[in-house]
Image 1 (tube, each protein chain N blue to C red):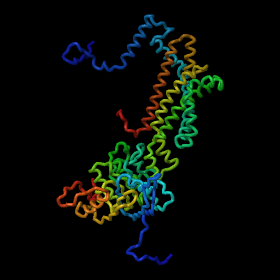
Image 2: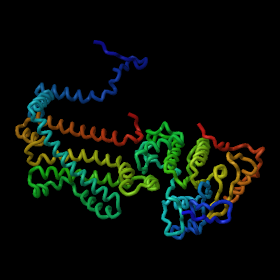
Image 3: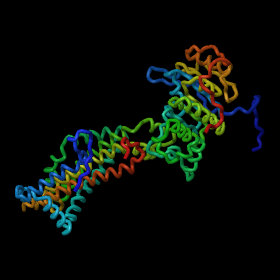
Image 4: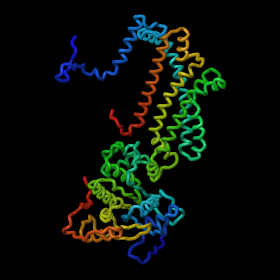
Length: 265
Length: 269
C-alpha cells in the first residue's frame, strides 16, 4: 500500500489526456477525410476546431463522439462524453425535462434534469414541448442534456451557428460559465474564427484532414478585441485563406461585443 | 314576427338574413322537409321509401324493444374482433419489416402481393373454407384492415428522423429502449393515418360480410326488412352505419389528440 510514488521530473504530475488520437485516418472510398491525425486534449482543456466545409472537422467530432466506427485504430476517448448538435435534436414527443433525462437511470432523474435546466436558465420551461422553444432555448436544452451526464468530454458541433448574433453571444457566456463550473474537456467545432478565439484555450485549423495550424491562446478571459486578439485572429484567418485587415484595435469599430464571462439574465 | 334584417349597403335591393349564407344545415333540412311532404302527399309510397317521421318512429320502437341495441352490439363485436386481429398482425409484421432489412425482404413482398388482391374477392374462398358462420365475416374484416395498418406503420418507422436516432444513440439508448423512446413515438402519426383507414375499411367490410347469411346483426335486420319491404327499418340501419362511421372517426381523433399532443397543430382549435 505505502509504496513510494515515483514522479517523473516535471513540474507537475502528468495527467492522462482525455482524448488521444494517434495517426488516425478515415476514408470514405478513395476520399481520405482524415489523414494520419495526432490529437490530444487534456482534462478540462477547451479546444476549438476550425476548418472550411469538407475539411474533416465533423468527421473528427463524430469519431470522438463514438458515432462513427474507428476500425481498430488508436483512439482513446472517455466513456462519459456528450454531444450538442447544431440542430438541437430534441425529441419532439418528449417534454423538455424528459429530453434532458433521456437515457438516464435512477430515482432522482427528474431532479437531476431539473437542476441541469435551471443551470442553463430554463427552470421555467421544464414541462414545455420542444416545438414551443426558441432556437436559443432549444440549444440551451441540448446543453443541459449534455451536462446532466457530467461528461469528461463535451463535444459541441457548431452549436451556435443557427442562432442570431445576440443569442450567440449569450450562449458563449453560458458555455464559458458552465465550462468553468464543471471543467469538462471541450471540443468546439465552428466556422467562426472570432468565436474560437474568444472561447478556446487552443485553436486548431483542420485542412484536408490534417492539422494545418495550432494556436495556443494565452489571453485571459473575458477576452477583449485588442491587438493580441487581432494578431491571433489574423493568423487563423490567413491559414483559412482569408485576408484580414491589419489590426487597429484602438480605431477599429467593434463588430461584435465579446462575452464578459458573467452569467446573463 | 319580425326578422332581423341588415342593410348591406345603400342599395335597398340587397336584403340579407344574417348568418344564413353560412347555414350548412339548411339544404339537408329542406331535403328532409320535401321528403316528408312528398310522403304525406302520397307521392313517395312507403314501399319505395318510408317518411322521415316513420323512420324516426321505427328507430324509437327498435331502440325500446332492444332489437336495435342487441343487433348493433353483434355487429360492433364483429368489427372489433376483425380489427383487433388486424392490429396484432399488422403491428407485428410492421415492426419486423420496419426495424430490419431482413424483415423487409421477407415480409414486405408478401404484403404487397396481398395488396394486389381485392379483399372482397376473397369472400367466396372464405365461405368455402370457413362456412357461413362468424369466422368468414371476421376474417374478411381482419384481412382487409391489415394492409393500411401495416403499410403506414412500416412507412412511419422508416420515416423516423435518423438524426434523432443518432442523437439518442449518443446518449446511450439502444435496442428496445431506442425503439420505445424514439422509433415508435416517431412512427405514431403515420400509424394513426393507417388506423383511420383501417376503421373505415372494417366498417365497409362489415356491411358486406353481414350479407352472408347473418343470424344476427345489422345485416340480418336489413335482410329481414328487405324481405318484408320495410324501408323504414332499412333506412334506420343505414343511419346506424353512418353513425358508426362518425363514431369511429371521433374515436381516432380523440386518441390522436391525446397521443400526439406534442405536435404543433397547423390549425389552432
